[in-house]
Image (cartoon, rainbow, N blue to C red; front, side):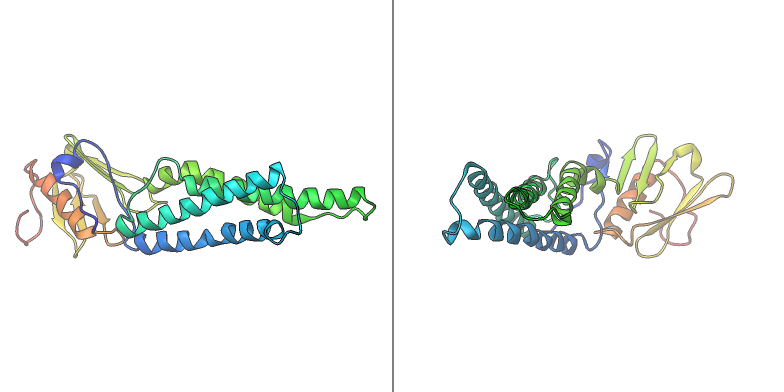
Length: 234
């Protein structure tokens, strides 16, 4: 089970917050990689059946496909033991991009040779579709970690900053901006500023949301900020 950092550890840097269904989302993403795996198997099937001779290009395709299958097994093992593990570079996505790029070239080359042999010229969209998907996978490989870290909780000596949804703005508050603070529901915080403005911060959509809320309240309590609720002062 994923364990959260203590308030002292979190003060050293932002803590990434994961969606409460993060584990299921990662499994769904892993299942989505079956598509490139099927493309790889279809691409090497003529070679395995003896219908095509192995070449430098097909040998490279087989090597990339074998690496891709190894990375898929590695990804599934990571999901089983730690679904919250994220690498700086998503190597499985890079391998998927290579397979799609190879398959795109393979299809284009096959049609190109057919046209040279006298077949009528036709516009084939499938190679271009695979090429676009390959570019998407490359972008995801280098940006997935960055996108995943958009949800975060940063407790520091001057206050705190938090974003619990990907597209939401960062809520950054310093001690001078906080008059009172109180629990708000099972996984939320109500912050009241000196000017009377209120901020509601909800961790309901976050994995271990109640624990992160409690860490935030403990951090605020250390600064002596009063609790405006009638509940137990935290």
